[in-house]
Amino acid sequence: MDTRLTVNLPGLTMKNPLMPGSGTFGFGDTPAAEKMDLNGLGALVIKTTTPQARKGNPQPQIAMLKNGVINSVGLTNPGVDAVVNEKLPHLRQKYPDLPIVGSIGGSSVADYQGVAQKLADSNMLNALELNISCPNVQEGGMAFGTNPQTVEEVTRKVKAVTGSIPVYVKLSPNVTDITAIAKAAERGRADGLTMINTLLGLHIDVETRQSVIGNGMGGLSGAILKPLAVRMIYQVAHVTDLPIIGIGGVETVDDVLEMFLAGASAVGVGAAHFDDMEVIPHLAAQLEQRMDELNIESLEELRKEVRNEFRNED
Image (cartoon, rainbow, N blue to C red; front, side, top):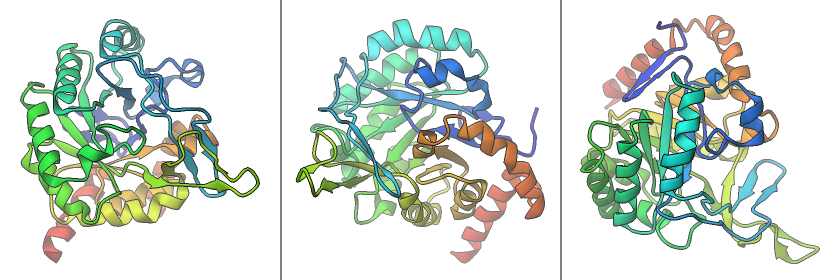
C-alpha cells in the first residue's frame, strides 16, 4: 500500500526512500545485519559481486577521519557463483518481500556482462547496480566510469543480457563533467543512476609518515562529501529524466530531503552506519514529522514538483 514515504522506481517499490550503500550489510550476512530486521529498509543493495572471489586490498581497509571515512576494501566477495548459489537463496528466503539490488563489478566488459547475466537469471533480485565507479580496484572499477564512450558501451552490453531487470549505473565523482557520464549511461539504456560513489582521497599519518589505509589511496565518504553529491545530482537531474538514487554524506532527515530537492528520487546511506547501524529505520521514523513541518504532502509529489521546476528552468 502506498504511503507518504513510498517511492516507486524501475523494479523497486520501496515503502520508504532509503537504502544502504552497496556492501553496508554484505549479503545480509554481516553481524549487524543478523541482529536487524532488514525489512525496515526501503531496499537492500548487496555487496558488489565479481566473476571470481576477491580477497580485497591490504589491511587496514577502513579509517575514520574527523568528518568522514576513507576506505579501500577492494570489492571483497566470494564470486558470483557463490552469491547466486549460496548467498541469495538464504537472503531471499529470509526476506521474501524486501526489494534487493545486486551490485556488479569486474575488470572487463565481459566480466560485467557475465556477472550481470548470472545475477539476472537467478530471479532473486529486483534490480541491478552497475558499479563502474569504484576507486579501490586496479583494473576495471573507476576506469570504466570516467570515459563516456566506455560507460555507454558497458551499460548497453549489460542491458543486452539482463532481460527485463532494471539496471542502475553508479556514477563516479572523479570526473570533470559528470553530466557527460550520465548522458552516456542514458544512451546505453540505463534505467536509472546511483550517485555518487566515493571520491578518491589520501590521508597520511604524520607520525608514521604512512597512509592510514593499507592500499595508500582510497574512497572518501561521509558528511564531507554531501555538498559535492548534491551539486552533481542537481546538475545531472537537469540533463536527464532518469531516476537518481542520491548518496553521499546523508546523516539526517534534512539531508534526505535535500537530496530530493537536488533531483533525487530515492536516497542511499553509507558512512552514517558507522555511528548507527539502524540509521535508516531511525530516519524513516523521523521523516513524516519533518515533512509535516515543511508542508510536504508526499515524497512522490515532492519528486514531481522538483523535476517539473527543473524542466521549467530549462
